[in-house]
Image (cartoon, rainbow over all chains, first blue to last red):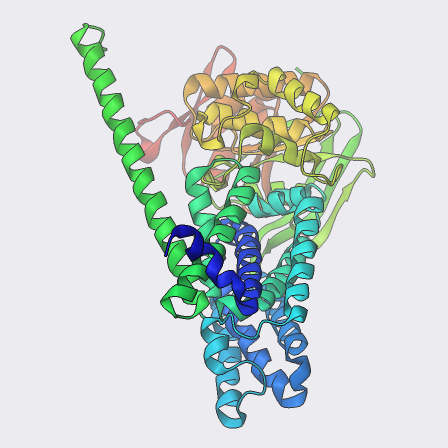
Length: 299
Length: 260
């Protein structure tokens, strides 16, 4: 099989086309939001919120199986806002608030699904992601969340950057920090909900963190980091979907593994570059010393 | 030098107490910030200097008493360098532009904003550093960057938290001269510091704080052994040199080091 066959053969399947679209957009979306999450030191929140959404996903099915997405979304938003309030207002750190609220929610989800079973996606699909059975509704839902997120990032770009960098000074400069934080939490919940299908509950957090961390290694500019992280996320989603198809393993797993490889490559390149720079500086210093230009050391 | 506070009161702290959670850091503070104010707040670590600054800024609400600002007062703040996240991916011009967050929603700077940023960086002598990452600056340049961000707000009152901390002697002098120039341009300035001797040489008005206001006045009035003992809880010897007070650490009655 040549490379073109490798690329085009899976596209003959409708389920793969849908999966590829969702995985690529999901990767870009998680990469974009992940910049704010990692820079705020809240990487753990993606892990927590995806688990919280799982609780809502299980509970909502008991009452109205066809609306489980809405139920899970509302549950996730409520969890995100609760974490935001608890971590800001009380003497509990954000990590502890996330740990308590979201693992409790996840435990409830597991208990409900074990007791009553699932009338929506299977337990395994929810945990690890699946490209099977992605509906048109889910694609439109993901697109809607992507548009909403883009609008937020464009029109609240400055406020989001300021509150991420220095919330106290932002507050004193007239930026509504609480509202900006709440808006980010809501969009994060919706993003996690919309991307859970393909990436899976247990792996979505990785795609919030990996593209952003790799992008941070590649640039020192905030705006460039947003673009780079989104592009890396999209690339991982795209490549991961193909690997998932050919390896026959859950999509989320391969998307995250692709991201991990990209991270390892970026880290290696950075280390090599640092070593080369150090060697170059040492060589320059030695050259100066040979030319008698070395500064005398005095005590 | 003016700055001892004889003009119109633009911000009034009246019998205010403030703190965090159950801890009260400041008690019964009265402080009238005038339109020509140039004041250094001195005191030991944990004395409430930063809390007082945050009270003036409005990010800490008084538990008792009141803080009253002129309706059109524009306050700008320069944070302590130690509190800044220097790994944040941001260039100097991106950081300075933060001052315009509420003036424009779009991410990119308008032509007039670009000019304003360029002008303020030029004024502070760091125009050529506009596209550098914030970590790639020296301590003095980092201070200037945050002052540039503050000035872009066109403030009436500039608050600085430890602007002379962690910089060398030349940078400290440059900084204090820069602040003096800004004050001469009509900006009221209040700053916190540990640097007693630097303040005595450059500032017309000092306030000693240790949980409350211990004393305030000109350096000659405030920098006395008795006031400093009340403020720092240790006996400090004060010498006079060319008409300026110089503080000597007189621990156990034996002069050892100059407090700086």
